[in-house]
Length: 390
Image (cartoon, rainbow, N blue to C red; front, side, top):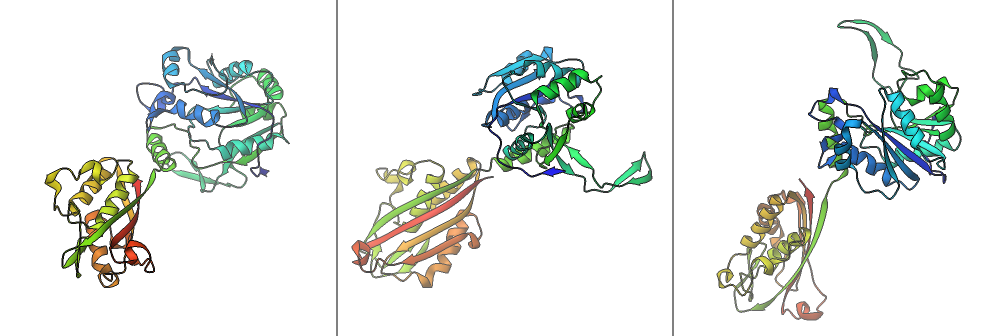
């Protein structure tokens, strides 16, 4: 029976994290639960997953007696009481030690492998919701691959109907699972086996492919990819600039010289389009503005082509680990007409930004003859850019 996820019940639950194993198959010089995964220990990520859940009122970690220093380094700050206890010679013994440390006031206990650091709130919610109606509940995924029997050669096939891939946390009502473990002789594959041997009913809840258990060396690479996907860093920056008209026979807009009866005035070449996109990038990086990097009081920047500024912003983007994925520029003016030059401007802007023209938008509007742009005293520009962590 599969029980759909629902809102978690009100009663308080304890998280029991089993972290006493040695993790030999994963390789490395220290147990896998203490190895680093994208800047944090595996155990740290696992504990944070439960510490951040509102239904968890206590966290119990079962660790190896030789891991005191490793545990102290991996232990995060939590709002709940967090206690560590020494595990036994087997997983069963470690779970019994952890169950003994769970506060009697807890209604439920969620028993979870320390090596599953990517458990989601939805998976936890599904287990807790099912515990309102059942003695136990555990997440799983249906087996979808064909199953064979054999050693080096296929000797037969196995029907996969009704087969599931078990995950954790495996949740239980506290009193019954304590009694189940006390009565079990040991050697169970997991806590569901212990519960069923005691006659407890265990519901299957919805698991998640991302809730992998780190077992072999390759699992660290897969887990790292998943962490990066969960932590995608997307930045948006806005830019605004204005330049007034003065003497001249053309204006520079997005690196394109457009014939006009007047020119734009500024310390550099006054390319209001490039200036605005540059400021948008600096804004997305929280790195100030053009004046921060190219002060107008510095004579070396007088008359400089504005692509120098934008190139600096683009290179800073890469140095900080981001890629520009989109730029949208709006020019506000009565004259000159932007439409006939928009294609060339997009192409030049895309070249400097080092992205495709399909990721660059250049458009124009008027202010309906209102304000300084309506009086044709200058040009204003607005820009938005999007950066994504590379």
